[in-house]
Image (cartoon, rainbow, N blue to C red; front, side, top):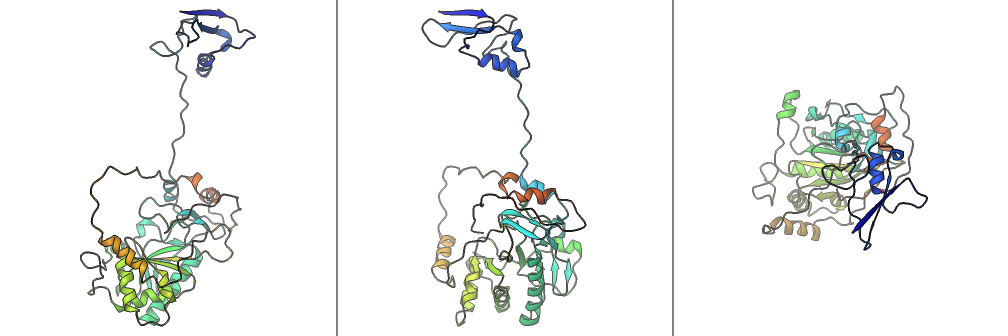
Length: 363
């Protein structure tokens, strides 16, 4: 049987203060409450007893529940970066890793160039580090002049301040990635609506185990090789079937070092994804791991085809839920500066902020 004693606050601390803390959180003055000290005769937890003033601790219809302090909603970083329409006029800098970072001082690839046209303008993703824009302009020129390619159709690069995108990509966050269509540029200047409506051509035959020779040929191989010969290019992602076609076309090449840059990757059957290295001297740009020093036409390609031809797995239990989207606190600390920067008249450097390295990703 429980015995309850009420008194003013004694020197000896009450054994159970949780109800008082709840009252205090609810805005009730402690001085107006009597201290409850309930002691069970058998040493067990005390029974719920009434406190003068009609307040009942514990649970039930008469219980006092401390107010819940509202917390600000968690906003995904992709929402923040996707909403910004102009670049941060800061010194050009790729910050973080390709799949977890941001971009200061972005430069816009002109919508129309002598040997290229930018596509899907409504996305506002034709931004990049100046090193990427320079590469694309030089590559487009070489592709036409040396390989006879009609011109590049350039797809997604980065957003004006880089960062995660609302749709479409895990990488492309630091201004060093660009998607280039395998469809050649037409012989006329596309309208803005045509750039939205025109579809890139799928280069694969039915079954997706080989390229379709009616749409993919030697000129495509030369285009990919031309891109790989640029020193700043570290990776070019293509579908495994396109990698296989490139390997077969280059079987008699004596110099095969460029082939290791052509990397098999899911998707990438309509376009190839070029990734350049961190520009020299760029503080805080995290380099990607080196790939194996071979042409990638042997065991690696065979492993990909083993995945492509594997029988479908039987239905099983549902997998884990998708990971939560990246939030700003998961990006390098400098990205807060980039996101908050205004369009100043003079470019300033982004102050370096010490932060732990971000985890690397394969793409």
